[in-house]
Length: 361
Length: 276
Ligand SMILES: Nc1ncnc2c1ncn2[C@@H]1O[C@H](COP(=O)(O)OP(=O)(O)O)[C@@H](O)[C@H]1O
Ligand SMILES: [Mg+2]
Image 1: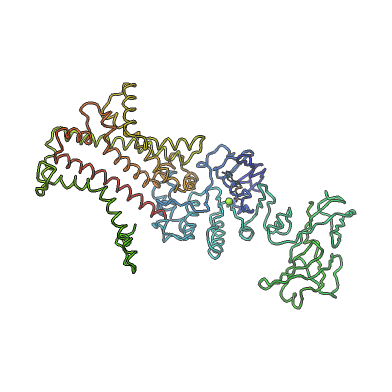
Image 2: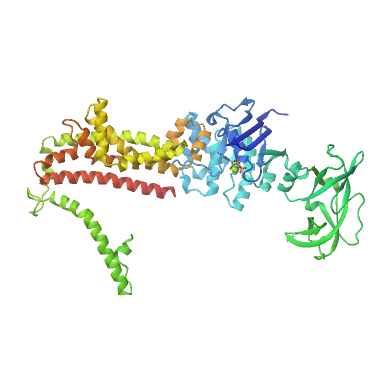
């Protein structure tokens, strides 16, 4: 495996006795597109600002290419940032904005011009080289902000919700653009967003941040199929969380009981013992609804309940089934499969336990 | 108040017309009270008579004779040197102070800001006397430099307050962007912060200039011997009676002060529009 380009070793940040980042460990490989994903206020921006050098970690160590960065001021770190509100210099035109970093590094004039033009070509803004930044649209300003950062050839590009201010259509477009730019320049991207769809669509790996902790750091598919905590399961896509208790265990199975059903699952996590409470997570699309008389497949749990609501979402139908006094689960079916079901009907639910995740409570 | 309101929009009811008429009368008398003395002063600077009593026809000869008056050019020169010098000092210090006040939080900051207003609101004669006593105590020679220092004490607050206001509209993420791109703190100040708040700094400098150029009280106390700036020089002329020369000179001071103050106001407005 390649050496990590960025290493965060149990970094924490405390503002006036409130700990907003708590013991985060991450190791990011060169060229990766990594996304910090979490709800607003979870500490994503603070982590990014510590990497950029705008905040000092209260504890822990930050290294870039193996060099410790804790005592290196922001202006000498080999990273550049694309700010959420772009932060373009209003007194400079597009060319001078992009040339800002190169001029500070005393590049020769002809070299500066060549590099600025190349960066503008990269973001497809060649036509606006002399434009005033105020005259540009939000999407164009965004592109200039990206060009201003990548022209310096940083080892790592930090992007803090760069698409947050754009409308949905432009957002989609810029997501693809950013993926292309990432491929073309080949530098490491650390991208912050609270939009899980965006994170899943763009990233090589997603770091889910929850209340200052790193909840999970894994490729999107793994985050989706093997979430590490109920929070991750609920934050990435939709899921049904069901409380259960371990009623029994043998060599390789647990018997789990809920208020309405019990089932047997293959052991994964060996530190769960009988008597312990657990939470089950089953994705709506993993659930199958069986109307009255259909045969149940072997080795699959089954629970019966009452259909309480049906909602069309595109070509799919979301079916809500009450399986216990306290528990309503939602299932996602194709409109074809859901045809003919009525509210109030008795139905059975089945699912493949390989698609269910068990968390200790 | 809009011109439409001043002209009194045509209304159907007489009562409303009456109300708007009385509003115009009120306004007119306030402005008359403020400006008639000044208008008369300017008018009589063009009066073809030694006396400020009756209008004897138009002439610009009083302005023409100004340079012939003993020490007049000297006074003008001193005024300009003192004003420019103190403008530089108060602008540099005031800009630093305004940026610092915006940027840093420290205990007692509120009190510190209140203290900035004190030189503006206390009677200037108190300030002037205290300056005179201070200069005597530390054996600082009275004269041009003493006047610069003295004027700076009451012009700095204007610069600080205007620059601080300019900073409050300044997006500090621009400074982070500059640091991110490799600028040191000093380079960030010169290449980003100051260029962007420059309209505010210029407004502060112009205010400082106009406050200093027409100052009488402080100059009178600390100018020492033979260093009278224009306002003090006028006072000297008055001992020989008010001649139209005084009118002409006063009109010039008024014009210079006004031009700088209006220029400042104009820049501030353009700056605000541009920021939108
Ligand atoms: N400079 C600061 N001083 C005090 N609290 C801060 C500061 N910066 C951020 N915080 C707090 O830290 C928490 C995390 O903020 P942030 O990292 O911006 O979250 P996110 O980017 O995930 O929305 C928030 O509760 C925020 O109020
Ligand atoms: Mg944030």
